[in-house]
Length: 360
Image (cartoon, rainbow, N blue to C red; front, side, top):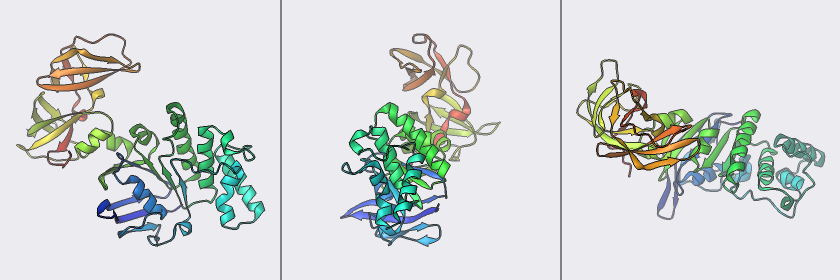
């Protein structure tokens, strides 16, 4: 499979800039998720790689081969659309084999490769059925088989699970990762679903307003966001401003904040100087009620009586720490709202973000 390299890509529709000097690199066999809100440019980037959208500047390469101006059919990419785009008047086998017939391959080879593609997507034996005889999940597998049968240089997926119900989405995202990794496919996958991205990706590229904000592994993007925009888009977080007092004896940073003095671990994406302002991000699951607080990062306040929400596997609790409203999560809750007035956060869970990151 081909490595994909995009450099300084610019796409404009009339006067609107949709992609603003976007650069990404996807290693051969890697599964990269393009994640962002609607209208951020992620589908336009995918369609540019496929050849459906012509950029006004920049380059796209498969391995060392420049393909920016190459026609779509000559790029040998497999694409799965949000709507699946299957032909209802054709059988499953005819849908899967369409691309091979367009390439004028021998009939026997087409039949063999269609059978192999259906088997790889766990649809063996379904070739004679028509599309309207299939469930949503089965149709999604057929769309995948059709993309795979041409043996693409890379696989492009445009929100392929958005039309499925929640339970089926969960099982199919596991199936897509299994399929891509077992076949060694270079895959670029568009989604706006954070959980989907965290579950499937080798790396995630977070987009906003036509730009890449951050690229990293799911753990890196979630635990060490580089901006407020990334911190708030990937999961839930508590945000507040703080001033850096200096460094800590054991490494890290001492902070003065509206929730009290805090200590942040040294492995941050920013290195602020004493006296500078920063934003602080603390994930709700990192705030723990305690009856025996340690000497670091003790948050003294109250749990609001009207702010307890039982959600089964977790309970969501609204806190008032000084003048700051915060949210905490309790895993596997067994009791009603706590009356604890002390909570704590580990230094490694205090994430520092730049004060002037441009987030809105």
